[in-house]
Image 1: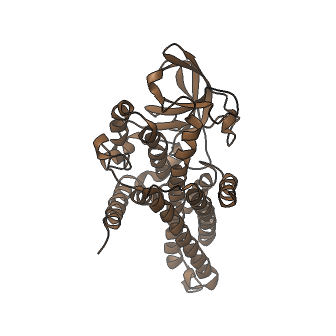
Image 2: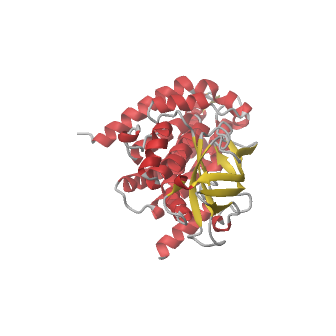
Image 3: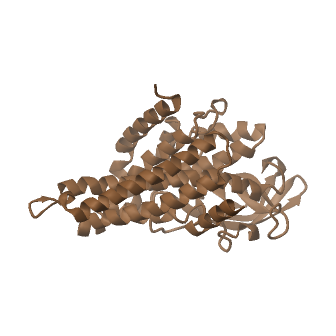
Length: 379
């Protein structure tokens, strides 16, 4: 008999597949070319239960686990990785941070709106001069009575303009102090809080990326997440789960590129037969398939461990590192199989080729994943 988790995965996969074919595939190229962030689509994803997939039912979520979550991201990303990225950022970062570290009042206030897709969530850690060196962040929060006053900026923030609420980590202590940062919940419309420049990106262009700017932004102490000084420690725990979602995004991107190349290789005729019958192409397809299957095992192993509430620092970094690199290798080979057509926008693989690169950068570069992995296995 199938387990409940497997049945849930199959139902979610089919449901998301149907949704993506109907509501996404016809618009992928248009969204990409215009850098349009389809907010209405995410409201619809909320109705489908995907914007609060990890949120317990008491807060309006689907109450499912990481295996189901990974499955949903993979299916979205097979059609448009940009949509998979935004769905992952909303769930893993903003929503999950409030779920994991918020008090009951904060959960009751924000989770139902986020889980329904009525609100879109953003998460602010990265700054212009502090990518991986988050301990030296320059966005500072200073206590003033019952309020904290924030000044500084964040960049590369998914949904920085369209997001209704953001979880922002600001420095409240000494530079470099791991206990010197604090997480705040800040709603759009708060005085002194605004979105800056929207990035013009190589790929993932339908996923909005902007700056966040804080100019004497006053945030009430009731909007502190967890304890003062715990922000950076919280962020590291959030990233453990977030890297599983980026691994799933990578996997979906790779599968999308592979499926497009496989179908094309069966249709494209050269010398009187499909190019899939030539060893040069068939061996490429064999390598692509094998690497995808290996990545899939790593991704779902990390998801399973996360559902068991095990520590997943090593597994999530391993899955994210391997799957993101596989995504780029597979997308590159997909373009090669298409030949000249793979270099045009008439076929989907050039977009997978552009999109995949973000997977090796977001939520920690491949080099940072190696650092995390090596520290874990040497500790």
